[in-house]
Image 1 (cartoon, rainbow, N blue to C red):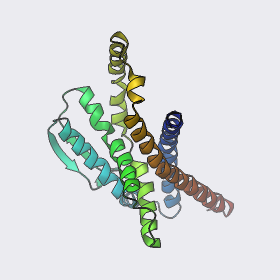
Image 2 (image 1 turned 90 degrees about the vertical axis):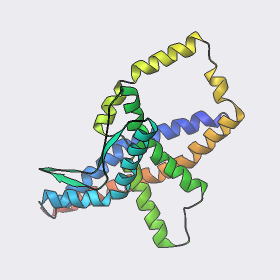
Image 3 (image 1 turned 180 degrees about the vertical axis):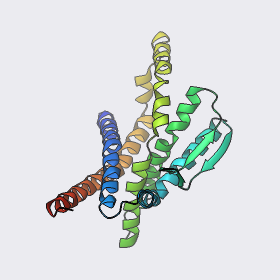
Image 4 (image 1 turned 120 degrees about the horizontal axis):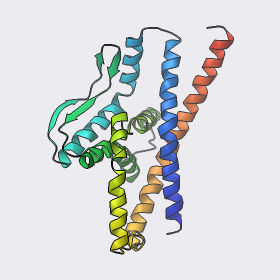
Amino acid sequence: MSNNIPIALIFFLVQVLLIFFVSRLTINNIFYFLRRFTKNEKLIFSLVSLFFLPGTLLHEIAHFFGAMVMMLKVHQVTVFPTWHDDYIKLGSVVYEKKDFLRGVIVGIFPFVFGTGFFWLVAKFKLFPQPNLLLNVLWIYLFFNISSTMFSSKQDLIDIVYILPVLVIVAGFVYIFNIDVVGILNSPKIRDNLLDFTREVNYYLTMSLGINLGLLVIFKSFSLLFNKHGK
């Protein structure tokens, strides 16, 4: 079973990376598709933000929870889209900045909540359902949450500052000869890690498939529109 852990982890990381890029392509294509029918940018952004509202809610709740766990005072929470001049803000959590490490941890909480959501769905066997409409709703949520569980641009910038900390931790592990591999090879940790990655991978694969399917559909429509000169 231990031999399956690296494979499951690599598959997990590859899928996360692919979804990160492919979901952004999908969102861009949604915008391009809607612009075929209207040039009203405010309407387009409003429709897209409404479509991704469930994922935005989870994303901002995760930031809020992360700030509370890190004992950072939250000044403002916005979970519903707001229009600012020429762009729409999907949501935000404004909290006090004390140090970059806690800021980074708060920044990755949406990803933790997103993968945790998939794990809970698997654990409680919430999908698939005998009801077709419920299955469609679940698939919509899988796509929605997988597309919004990644950190914002500012969060990604903050993550760069964690690299020196990782170097220090690696040095600490090396100096004190901590057997990290041995800890990870503990039967209980190994089995739980394998179960988690397998269960989450199932839904990540589904989310990736949905994104790729939508890309094919939007590209097909684009070719069709171009062919007819629209």
